[in-house]
Length: 159
Image 1 (spheres, helix red, strand yellow):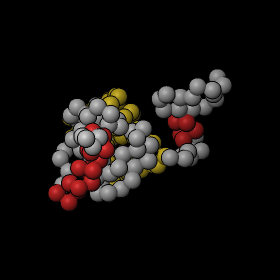
Image 2: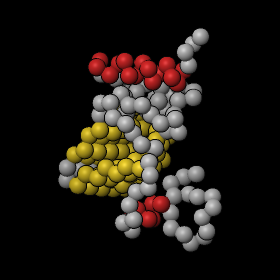
Image 3: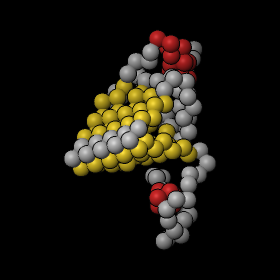
Image 4: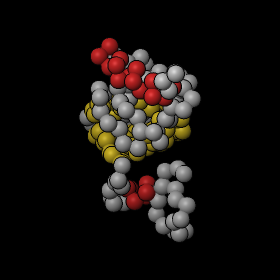
């Protein structure tokens, strides 16, 4: 199910997205990063939750997954960018699914194909006069060991 989708919700019940917009907050396993005329960077060995709401208004949010332990179910990133930027950096082998719209901005998906069985990073949202970029990059030298452990988990031990 997608963002706010529920199989047993009665008709007329607000979706999770609508609840968030009405100020009802986040549910369990959800985290918000909101940059208003500022910058937020999540990089290094941080622990992502299954649902991330990343909004930027004349600001920047960078989510670098190269040294993280990705949840088995993947990560859903929901975003609204206005005159700002969201940049998602993936390690090789981690697939992305980008479903975004833009008005006078750009959505760029430069991610590479993922390893079968690897969790997926799903990016959904929109940008107005801003940019959403998803890119695959090799981990920095200091993050290589966590990257290798993650790849081994996705590929199996090879025995």
